[in-house]
Length: 347
Ligand code: FNR
Image 1: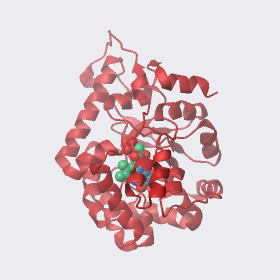
Image 2: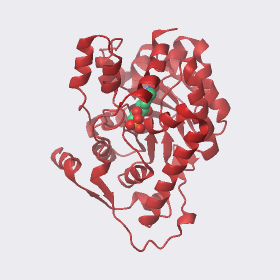
Image 3: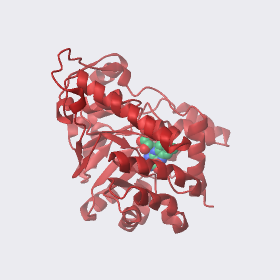
Image 4: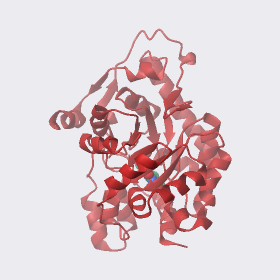
């Protein structure tokens, strides 16, 4: 068992048995403007969403989580079955472990087997992209016959995990080369610290097709690595960075200035949060932790969770008079509190 592989299993167990969220993504500071005369039929609401050439039935995106250890196969199977059944987009977790050791591919290939028609996103860290180049990106996409690849960035986690890579030089150049030469859309994704307007400009400038916010206020890698750290100095370092990052709502406002398709992930915890994210400029709303817990339990538990999220989204659309996702994207919002202060003091 490789270190990369066993780490994947550790992460799932830690996430299910401990509080691994930190901070506030800002959704509590956002209200959608209520429409008392919605003039639309709630049962005719259409949540279909276009994203990178695909038509998805809902903006709910199953964010990248797992794969790479035999114990993660069942979780990926359940997530994939639900993605197929509801026509949701889905990302797999980092495929590094399976690229290093092809015996571990099964926990990823199960996703395409169970979801033959779903929009699937391959996943690779930007450090692995820099070190192994386009060949690993190609293998990652082929492994699950993906429609796109997400290149994840996790500088905070690299800085505080014992096996982390501390040199981030050359990543932007590697990204530019990938975007120029790769035949699939490239999504650049943070994993809990968010993306600023300046970073978004650099990412779009490199040629990426979309940005996944991966904002602060949901799952916290500082918290996960602190729980995993056996070295007390690394645990302390994780502790010191518990409040580091750009909250998802603030990051969404920053990235929206730059343009291009956006997935909002990081601390979305209901269908109402997805509706808020769309009104703030996102195309899709991704969730990881809220789907992981039911997915670890059973397929039925996962289906129930997804049903509840979808129902909340539809009611929020009804109450804002939004028959389509386009209508929802034009709904006005009130933004208060710390989120408003951050937005107003950032320029
Ligand atoms: C993740 N996330 C993640 N992201 C990524 O790009 N590659 C990965 O391998 C993983 N692995 C992973 C494992 C687990 C157990 C969790 C909970 C999350 C990050 C994820 O896609 C998402 O961006 C963040 O978790 C924020 O969303 P939530 O969890 O707050 O909804």
